[in-house]
Image (tube, rainbow, N blue to C red):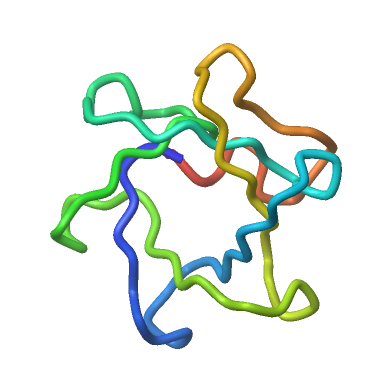
Length: 95
């Protein structure tokens, strides 16, 4: 998801995200990275940033799957990260 800014307010965010613990339930498996250049343009590699002005997407974490636009599960390996199924946000988060 490229460069991500976490927002506290749903109305200030682009995407409502719910973190799930099961890979099979997730829409997207996400690997956190430190490098902005590695993350840019990749939906599945997230680099968290402090400034909304440099972020590709602004997200708000929610506790309910039913209100979320996207279900994610964090993984430790870049090779495992990626979309698990077709999704309307595919290719649109990191660009």
